[in-house]
Length: 223
Ligand SMILES: *Cc1c(COP(=O)(O)O)cnc(C)c1O
Image (tube, rainbow, N blue to C red; front, side):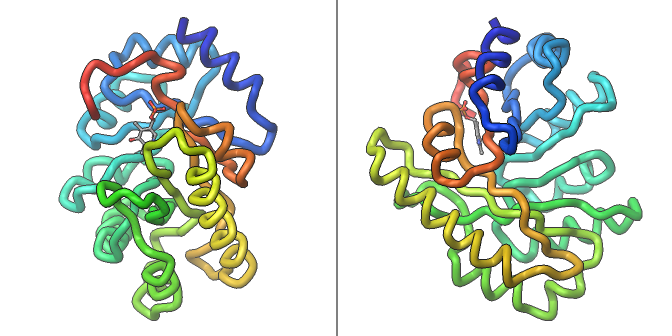
């Protein structure tokens, strides 16, 4: 089923939208099936699990860390991670920069923006992002690059609310995209949308969707 699900979703996506197959909690065989169907971008939310899968699978896979980050574990993925979606603290950015420097590379990051009305979601406010991007301390980080923003909408069926949340981030993204282009900030990616809401997210400006259960089936435990 994984192959069929994947191809169906891919067909439905506009050309400019990148699909991240969220494989957290799923066994290696499931990822291999998606890989055989052509998928090359996988998203995980736990660093150790991503490291294990990276070591077991072909090296042309691009690994995206989509979970909330523990700074002390960044070092385990610095050598291979392709994009980190969930950066919601300046201190985390500094740690990523430090680890990237050790490998003489630049790690692409998305700042996570809090758009949901729920208290349970992580993320920076628009004001906090403005502050970070304008700061001298940020300009000194040469081994990271902010390539976009990531947002998670409220877990709800209310279409108007979802739309409002997605649009608020799209508007903020567009404003920054034009005015903030520096050596370590060039906004191209707007990561919004999961299995339940990715179509709406795309309609509201997303160009990267993170889809798990619609490809791999329901997860057995909450992760
Ligand atoms: C698990 C997860 C997803 C995928 O969720 P589905 O509803 O299974 O598509 C997307 N983004 C983040 C940050 C996640 O943790």
